[in-house]
Length: 528
Image (cartoon, rainbow, N blue to C red; front, side):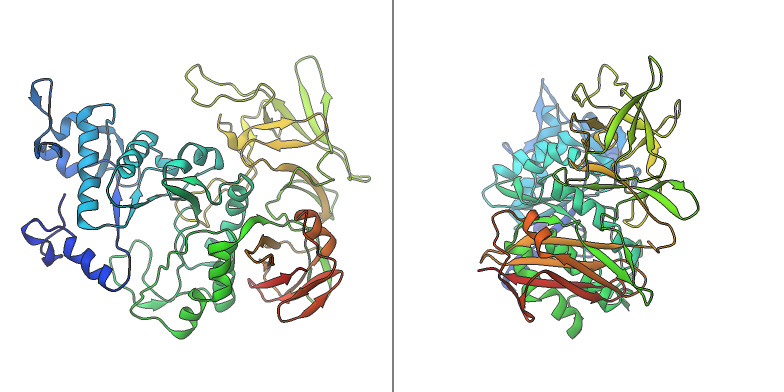
């Protein structure tokens, strides 16, 4: 593979990106490239010879030379670029030789970072990821390995690949709309709960990637036009995005034009607190025990596990909501089995419902084919809204190509992946195999607005400080509060009885702040 010499004039005479890499390195920067899965359709149609880097000639095996059509798998084309690229057969020596030649060439050019697209999420190709990771481990210089896209990515999927890479997308493409920003709260929570932040990775660690930061001077998605406009996110929304990305320790990939940085954008992406949290914090997790008081009526919204989906109405003024929280929470043990007949059972939530009707789901053992790749515990099951309905309860919304586009309901066609697997424990808790969180049900006043809710994240700093981020997803100003006692429960071993807050002085029982629409507040708590 070679760059287009008309576009990259320094690549003439077989130099590739060597001169570009040297120029980038001379500016104190790293040089990265974006590549696609496997083999290009152009190379396949031309049936080009496969390079053997050990001999410098065509790859030979079994007495013949091997070509592109021997290794390309047309049936496994990139789903969203089917006329462009296809998988290669890594079980063949020629297929492995082809991939090896690519990544050894990237190393020779001086590449520091490779974004490998159309191999993860809906386009998962574990074989190619595994072999590329093996090649990168053997190179004489480190190359950071990044996977894309993140549509339909789950913690279970990441379990197979996080140790092979350095970062991997967990959402669809992120652009400068509030819907895209808000769509990242649930998925970042789930990967944090699965202990994937900073897990073992290729020659170091790996990180769930929430995608680029669409700040500053931008173009439009899918456009071949260069940057021509400012980000559509207002300043509060930009601060929320930067803070969530930092608290979740997502790679911070700036998506704007660095040649045209305004002062506000520059101050955001270089904020010392944000960079400190993103680089060095630990124990990063969503903190569910916050309350929000909205508007002039001072109605208080329920605790903020806002991944809830309305399951059924209860009378005219109440609705039941399904939420997910830590299984250590005292109010998750409300589920029990109700036998309807010999072959049919329900799992019902009766606790903390007062006079309201219990919420019940039908249980069904998952039907797995003999060649099913995932093996589940014997006690795991599907949960259906009604008997005979082939729609199962999801633990989290499944992402499409863009981050804000996801299914609004809790149920989707039954599948055998962990996203729909549940296990009822003897203590009455219902745990998700997808995230390791437990399901709860709560009845709330339907007259209280819930257009977005409030969210919170916590983390600990390398000097013992505690970071508390409060996020307002509502469409009006909201006072968000958290008690010191709840923070202490979430961070056992921390002494929060005599705590001071950076810029606010000593605090006693709680922290509280009026937060702008779609905005956030970040507290730095200094503990003795």
